[in-house]
Image: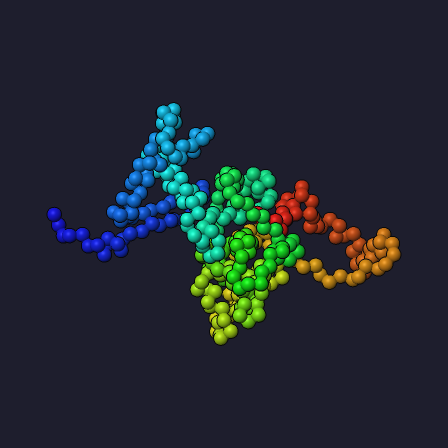
Length: 332
C-alpha cells in the first residue's frame, strides 16, 4: 500500500557516519544502509557473527571453518557484540588480502604513530593516519602481526634522517616518515588526516628544481596543495624545526597562524626550547679560574651580592615539579 518507493530518494538517504571519538576512546557510528548494502552484510554477519566465531576472548579465535562446541558454549557475547567483532574480522581480512590497492602511494593499511617512550613503558596512546587515538596496549596488539617501521628524527632540527629521493613522487618510506612527522595536512586550520593527504614540495615544486627529499616535503590535502602557487596564492617554507610554515596571500595576511598544530597537539604541551642567548666566548685556560673571575665581576657589578640567592631558579632536576621536558626526538 502507499506510493511506490522513490529510488533516488532512497539513494539520497544512504549514509555511514563516524561521530567524534569519546573520552573513553570508543567511536560511535550511525548508518542508514540501502537494501543492497544490508543484503551484502547479512551473509557476512551470518558467518562471522555466529556464536563462537571471531571471539576475542578465545585464546585462538575461530576466523574460518566452524567453531568447536566448546567455543560456542563459552561465547557469552551479545548479538551486537558479535556483529562488532565480525566487522573487525572482516576489515582485517580485507586489509590482509592485498587486494585493496594503494592509497596515496602506500598499500591500504593501518598506520599508527607513537613515541618510543610510550612503546617501552606500555603507557600512552598512538594516533592513526586518520586521527583516531588508540591506546598503546591495542597498538602493541595490532603491531604483533604487522610490518614495523621506525621513524627517527634529528633532535636538534627535527628533520627526518636519511630518506632522500630524486624522483617527483615520494617513496612509500618517505610517506610513512611524513605521516609520523606531520600527522595530517600542515596548512593551519585544516583537519584532514594523513590518509587524505599528498606529499607536497615545500620549498620549491619539483618542476622548478625542488628536491623530493623528506626534509623538503610536507603533507597537504589536495585542495590545499593546489592553493600553493606563485601567482598570488599561498606559499610554504620549512622552518628550523622542520615544521611546514604557510604564508597566505597579502590580502589574507592578517596575522593568522603559520603552523598547523591540530594533528600534533603535543607541540603545544612540549614547545621547543628557547634559543640560547648569544654568549661571550669562553676564555682559554683553566675553566675554574675563568668561572671565579666571572663570579667576582658579577658581585662587583651587583651591589646586592647574594640577595638574589633566595629566588627559586629554573631546574632540570627530574624530581622537581614539572622536571625536564621529555625528549621529543624519537617516534615510531
